[in-house]
Length: 195
Image 1: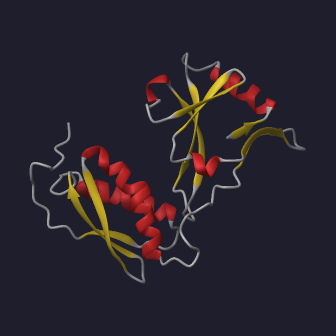
Image 2: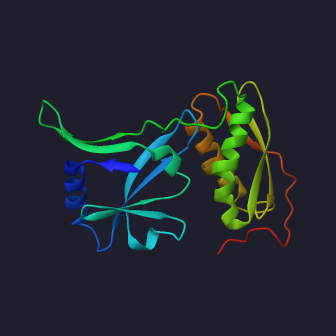
Image 3: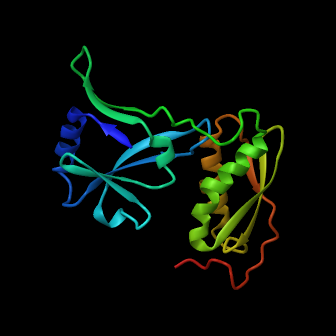
């Protein structure tokens, strides 16, 4: 899936030699299908590999990639180059990074709806929560309602501002003014109570 050049392999082996045993490299995509799409490379300690992750073997190390990132990393190449000033750096080329199943002429609402389905709600599902995109105004005010574990949760404002709003502003730069919760909150048996 990802081509890693011999020089980049050597670099990763050197980096990993300073980490705890069985540490891998994780490659993932944030905000896929949006103008704010990003690709990242991180250390991945043994305890951070999940049963859903796929592990790819390279020369002297392994790379962890979650299934949702994989379509965007097809034909990607990681290289380690030295420029004319003798400055060395990793380069990452991912031709499918901006790939999207959303038509180019889709409305902002349709693009946001896709983002909620692929990014926001899978994250909220771990607490039994769900966020529904209700509306987006021409000036970028997004209205959201919560259900399940998020309805009545005392952390919902943190989820709204630090989670959803921050992610939408990063994924859709310049298009989102704020995100507003329009839920009539009440505590129920489904409400997430925290630890």
